[in-house]
Length: 85
Image (tube, rainbow, N blue to C red):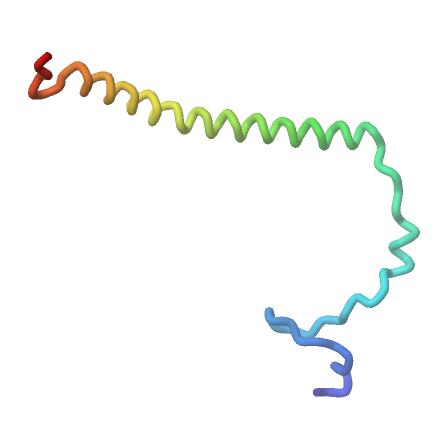
């Protein structure tokens, strides 16, 4: 190993990275409380994406279900040979 890379571990993706032994003291002092408005905006966006996803998956599946039921209806009405009772 080179002298400048001692104490550093190679990663599977390639370059050598430092091990995070301790959090940066500078960043520890920057933590702030989030405002309720921001939390509400995030919550609204998440709900909007969930609803959109559920509606999209519903409308993607509806034609397959409708055609499947229509096919079962037609095949039950037009059975060949007809059943003898």
